[in-house]
Length: 318
Image (cartoon, rainbow, N blue to C red; front, side):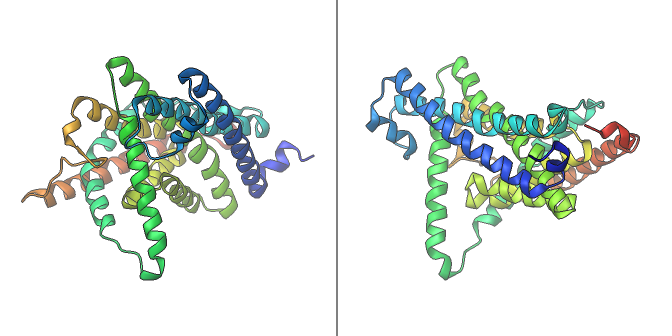
């Protein structure tokens, strides 16, 4: 049996380990969630199959059951999988995953501000992305991508249904809290480190992880924007060595969609925020957003690298 040290220096084995754990947790969570949903909502086998179908015309019972199933499966796959992985691999698992204190609280404000000011330029990128057309020989793949995206958006719309403040908090847990914590644990806390070590290049590791992060969302029109956001989260983790900053950014991104859906659903069109309609000032808004984003990224990089340069290598031993 390989020791922790030997496994820590074999990124391919680490990748196989996290994939094996992920597949195991997928099967376990699927069984548990189906049993819990069947008992909680008194569903038979026929109704349970609807949980995996298009939710655009589903009943409220099926939607609520799907929410519960999503909560259970996401917790197992995205939260528990990387934690178990770290427990196997590291003597200090939570420290290794990136749960380190951010000593400059202003960085949290900078990340939250970035997520707000980046909205116009991301909206513009999504518009440009939607203009891209795949070549004819990939037409079947293009059709599959569009159908998958429509299903994904239908599920998103179904999940963004509310019945008061308790329902809002429940949806925030499903759509914002668990994805922010779990996806950052898996992608930045585990996969990014594996790819960086495998390629011996932290930047390549960040972008490979960002591409994979975007791919699992299966939103073809948002692919570039999600990739860029994933890279931003990756650099936050790379610079600060703390997972709290990308978790916050991820939470603000998802949470803002939930809050807008609850308080101002009229400004949501087909799952995208459409408050940046074309006007005579659109170009200035996009450029202003881009400049602000670059400025905040520069501030974050400078603040985090100055802090980390003071840390001696011996302090990083886990």
